[in-house]
Length: 65
Image 1 (tube, helix red, strand yellow):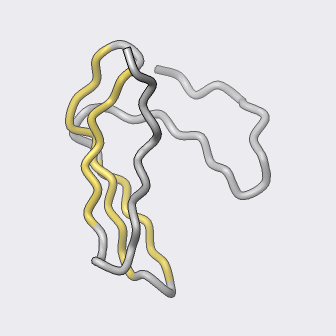
Image 2: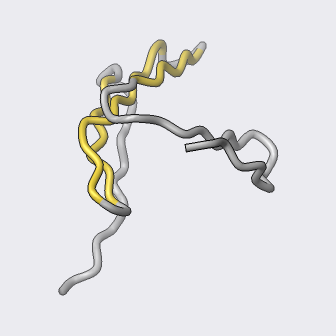
Image 3: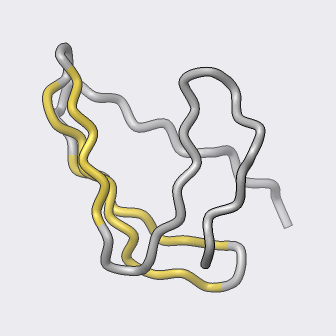
């Protein structure tokens, strides 16, 4: 999937990824946060998050139905 130039807000990075790839985020306050793509199906992706207990992971709200 070629990267497309995208208009992004300052501080927002758009990246393409494949199943099995892991992104490592390093924070001065929260240490390392790892995001791993475990599966993709159409518009959905199964994401694994590994972070310190002090990092709160907020899931998106799901619509009923």
